[in-house]
Image (cartoon, rainbow, N blue to C red):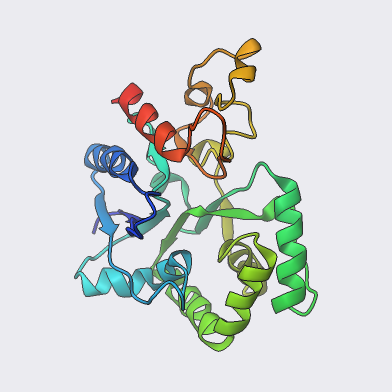
Length: 256
């Protein structure tokens, strides 16, 4: 049995995933080097009006079984990432636990999301923000099938309330609910170092998106020096039109 890297790459016609081919290529190179299998998921299970793509990934085990893929551990990783070709094999660091990387940036968003989703869906419950993981990098194994079934059941029971909350709060789709459910179900977690999911690169001042920044920053890929997996989330519209597509393509071409 091999370890599997699972990448959702659904085309919705909005141009968001124009550069995701570079993400897939980077992960294919990493998988070949580390004797892992790559599975790129490209087919919706449900219309996005009923279930957001990020929620559909919790059908991971169903998708693997439908494709007759046996596995040891699985990384679910977002398609707006690039992995460095020299990235260590993080599957060797899991201790067989459910693994994620804590969010390290935009704490206003995290705190607001926790508070609002807690009120809307969890009777005012709260969770510690310092154990809040980003949903774009999760490592699981067969021991976590039951938890994924719990996630799917929670959605089936609460789908309208969840969709209403997503539209009202505008601070995430599945990620905060995932963190609440990990806490509620007492899932045995291991938090991997941030270098395996280096997020919020704009907020970390590692990319230039405004010419004014060039007065005090060199236009280079600073993040290559501080991490192994680069996650191009939450890059706002900017005067230089350097969106996630720009950074994904530029990073891939610099590394490969």
